[in-house]
Length: 423
Image (cartoon, rainbow, N blue to C red):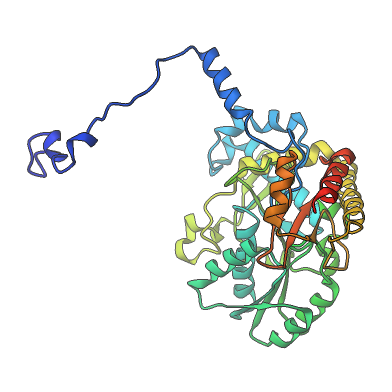
């Protein structure tokens, strides 16, 4: 290689670099035993203030829910951790069956007819829904309600930027009506929305139906066990972030997007689909089906450029749902709802704190603070409490608080008493 580029040695290759930067000596301490190293790392880690060690009321798209121990044990098995894309069904029945079970559970949860085996995350799932709606309707305008998560909105905007699809943001149902036309491919809403409140899905669906556009709903999967699922409101496409279903909050993920739709749109749906079939010996088995939609076959004409199904995270979600069952998930959703409402009624009775929105919320709500949320959160931190998400850029002195089944009554009371003490 050196000869090919016309030099004689490696040092000659790096001759332009200052000598002090070539093989510098590192001032590292002497080596220590593994036991001493673990002790030192534990001391450093204990300085972190993390949810679980101290009360946390932070949500805004990433939530702390209890995860049964069996979920981690199942998802950590080597057969799943190391398995590759199941293009050869004869050696991938375990992975394929998990995908099939995941799809079946998602259909049951959302009330939709078909689901794929997973997307990257909730944001990209919503963006893919917008692209799919444009393909189905052959229209090039998308309306998105401004109560959709700002991060989701930015991802959708990025996805559509290189296409001929125009994105319009509506600030109310009346605004949706005024923006609607025969060019509208879909209306995108989030319910519960970014601020935690449910939308009037019935009225929005009627608007989309009147112009023959698709109705796309992004939702919290746990809320579907408490409220009527989006299918009840005749949603055409339902997407969600699966993180609350057995996946711990983690900076950068990995997360998992849920994607379900009506059966008549199946061939336009992005991502992988696992089907159940029968072999020549009449034994049931599982295979990737309708693969002609995917990019490894159709390349640039595929329904999507997604090239993974986040199968391991889908396994985690499947194990979580199977472990909790219908009643367990419903119980979790009820705890979220009632704990958040207990907190809301207590906080709004504190002088200086108000709830700017009216309506039904699930596990999050917005409060307007007497001081900037950054100052409030700083004081909460001093009292070993992780406060809410600062949304003062959207609402004056606004803070988004989240309450799940992991927040005890004593933790909520501690938050309330600390807020009362702030002058």
